[in-house]
Image 1 (cartoon, one colour):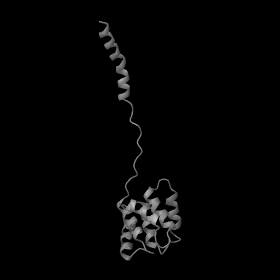
Image 2 (tube, rainbow, N blue to C red; image 1 turned 30 degrees about the vertical axis):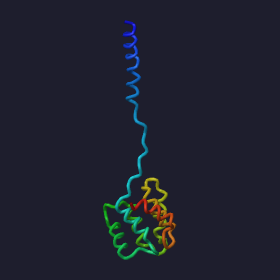
Image 3 (tube, rainbow, N blue to C red; image 1 turned 135 degrees about the horizontal axis):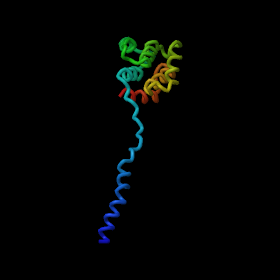
Image 4 (tube, one colour; image 1 turned 90 degrees about the vertical axis):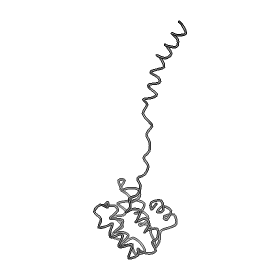
Length: 137
């Protein structure tokens, strides 16, 4: 009888411990960065191939983004800055891009594109092209 009592007592005492372990909340997971939108991927591809300024065909694609009501304000701002680009960022676009870079609510991909355009001198650097490849894929 004593061995049976020991087994029952062990089961009764262990049950709350097992239940507590099963109801522990899962540890918080860090969210993966959101995938870049098609517009952002397109602009990253254009910027990777950039040589002084976008081609006429690329400008037409960018104009499509600017005119797209579904595009975000950040996407339209970056697209317009790329259209206006002549070897480096246009003076009128500089404060708009700087505001995107500083705004914590701006998606990381838009901040990256904006910072690359702001530092651009004829073509993106090799390091910038590596950053753009990650966005474009």
